[in-house]
Image (cartoon, rainbow, N blue to C red; front, top):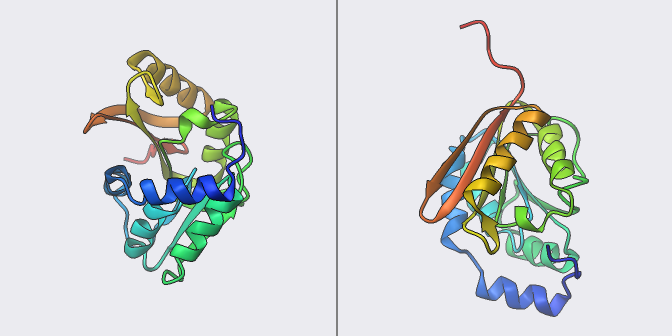
Length: 188
């Protein structure tokens, strides 16, 4: 976990080097967004994935949250042309959004930085609307990622907290763990 706050200089350097990695396109594609979705990116960094989502959710909203105020400032500046994009300073463990605000919530390469994963997963579930989808994308591996055993533990945690239909898949050297908020539809 990275416990040092990001300075403005560090945020600017990171945002240039990692302007829009291919994992941003991957998480947006895997989310299966529709025009009316309301999306949240936890640990959004400079906001590249949020902008990609905002271009799709034209009748909805794309939001990002990051604990680094300088990073959120960069994301806001770069996203001015997207009226449906917004960014807030906050942590995974205390999201500054109302219950059920989003139809899709993801975190891409920031889960390994969360201070309290249970609290972050509970917050993810809280801000998801019933039937909403949560996704965790991390590198497949030990450093800054999830091993098979760590992925299994995350799946168990998500199920214990109330996610349903939790699944793990691997795509392009990435681990994607997904789950749905709410009770299964028993009417079918």
